[in-house]
Image (cartoon, helix red, strand yellow):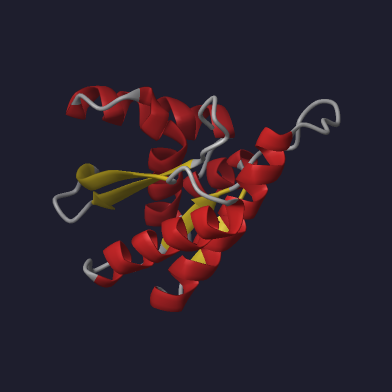
Length: 147
């Protein structure tokens, strides 16, 4: 979330056909400075359009982890709304779309959340990408290994 309450969605596409994971595509989808309903719609449509132009077998949307203590701030609420919009958009294009927490992505990866995040950070470092793509890359790694 930016300081002006504008969410950004991050997309990472991985290819493992060579026997190792390679980032094939990555893209950020920042929301415009418009009302919330328009932000959700426009970002979801942008992601939907991008997915339609790719060959993707599975989509994993990484949802926010449960905070250690409840929070009534706007940021987490906006993230949850955006996650729902993005999941719906992805599901309309890719039937094998799932939504999971960091712990879920760790399990699907075959380890723990910390392990999939560490693998994600290493892959991002190899490709010279910013750490803001960590959650999306972790989700992509989980998508490759989820049965």
